Length: 134
Image 1 (cartoon, rainbow, N blue to C red):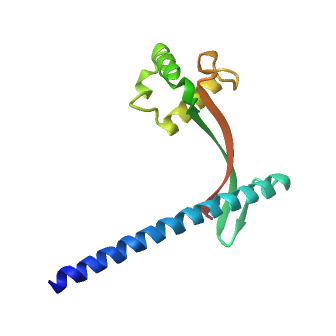
Image 2: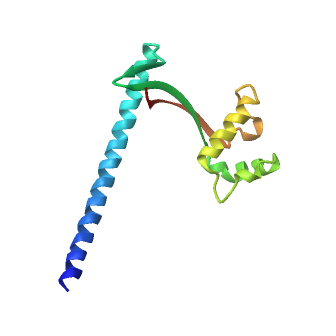
Image 3: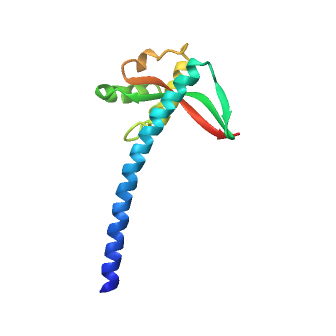
């Protein structure tokens, strides 16, 4: 019986620890995002594309993110099917796949969203700072 109680106590302790770690991770991720944003602004204002610091290469990277406009999601799915891109659709459209797809479509359309996607996806650029061992 003691083993059961010891295991129960250990399980509770581990789950509590997991909860605290999740909270810490959430706070850490917010701090990372804030610091990355501030660093990207500093790099952009000083026209610095990349630099080495303590054996790490920091460089600006712009990624395109696309997501369905919530109110027009059904229309987006229908438009994708009509244009022959129904294979992108599962129960939902994967955000990374949609972003890559929209980027391709924009590249083929003078960096503009094709008319058939207009109002069906939200598109924005996010500047981030990537790290790589130098």
